[in-house]
Image 1 (cartoon, rainbow, N blue to C red):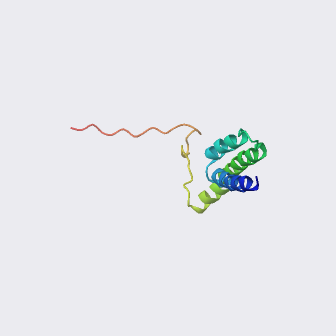
Image 2 (cartoon, rainbow, N blue to C red):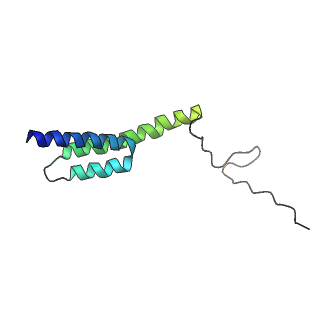
Image 3 (tube, rainbow, N blue to C red):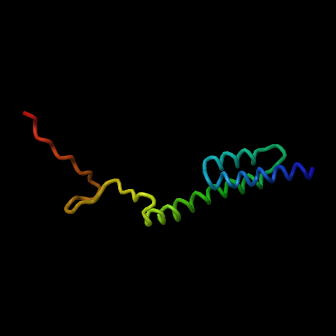
Length: 99
């Protein structure tokens, strides 16, 4: 029985690593562990919680920090221009007709 727990503990840490790298896969793996017949509900909930927590940390802390350093692009979809109403998409200039 102890060997089975040792093997499962390895897969628990794999789930934690997957959850830190990819939230969706971490949640899927956490649900799979949570619904496993022997009953590893506690480990499944920990993996799901860790996946969501890692995503929130990366999205709200690491992402803006990397954008501030210039590693990630600072995405501004609609640039604000002087004298333009906020949220209005500027039109493209028309080209002169070819002769």
